[in-house]
Image (cartoon, rainbow, N blue to C red):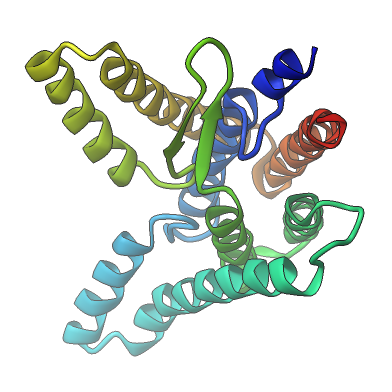
Length: 234
């Protein structure tokens, strides 16, 4: 019985949870780009590029609109670390606190008028930074339980690891390499689906569509709560 429990206890993040976070990652990026002045919520590489190009052209204010989310993203990472250290040993799991904070931030950002897009983008980037830091691994339970590093708000790392793992499979015929490559590829597919959903939602309900992300976070919260219960049983 204990072995069965251990098999299904999730020490990091299950595939379902990671998929929900990836969908919301794509959604947030599409929302901030399509609805809030063509700034990326998650893709800080893009923001740094656009900030630098605008600085070179002397467009200081535009450069600032790209710089602000970058600093907010860093603040989100710091926030997740602070939660990690401050809430050690608390009954409510630290990842639950991060997800709750994220849901509140995303819900609140829907009420920010378009004139304050820079503030809205900062809030979303803050939420993304916290998510990136708190959810860095995907754990697959089952016959061969494995844990992989992954990202739910950006694609480049998953893409690199996926391509490398699939190459390794063809070199060494190790099934777990192929499995890892396909899992990480599927996370990027979920991100893309989230981006499509974000774009369609913005077209329909404009700035209020970010509330859908808050609902995703509520769903993620429920999943973490259920996972942690199985963890406590072991």
